[in-house]
Image (cartoon, rainbow, N blue to C red; front, side, top):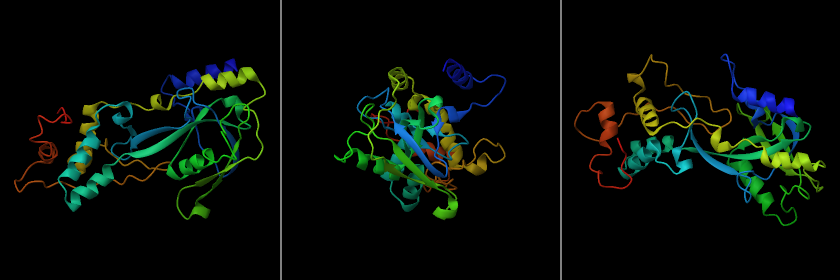
Length: 274
């Protein structure tokens, strides 16, 4: 166990340009059946699920929304402004800019208990299945460390889904079982968990605003290699936009068009601090 902890710490603080092994933090279902146990969250005793909003395709990196931390989000504010100045083009662009919600749950994968608690991330359909099971009185609290239930995750590949993505479904095990027969192990798993809110780089307001400006005007940054579309293999699609906004009959540069959407709002509490 100590060696495993050392290996984990070394992976989280890579040296010499070595890439971090994210499989030590995140678990992804593979094609076939796997048995897991959702563990009570170390960060929220009342709810094992953490909902977070992300942007995909704005840059070559996933961007976590500042709204997750109660902070202003320039992309969300810009999308809101587009909807206020309604037009079909603005509406479509605002929809493309909406953050995608991903849900995270701490899990133990049966047969891989030596890897400790990892984060399983999933979308709306799996979330609905898990919530439906949670409110079923015949099933009860499947995260209970003494009388909970394991879950069977069945995953099919692209040959079955007809898409380029896998698809998973959830089935609850009928038998109630403890998380582990080792009380010390249970206590460790309850405390030693990755924090989903701390696993992603937090970009500053200005960094996100700059990335949005470049995404809105890709031809102006062509060749720089810093704004590219990221494949959304695990997430909802976020197509790259080639829209340019004409909010005035006056000819303007693209960055002027971007900032002009916020003109005249200096006294509003939600004004962007540009």
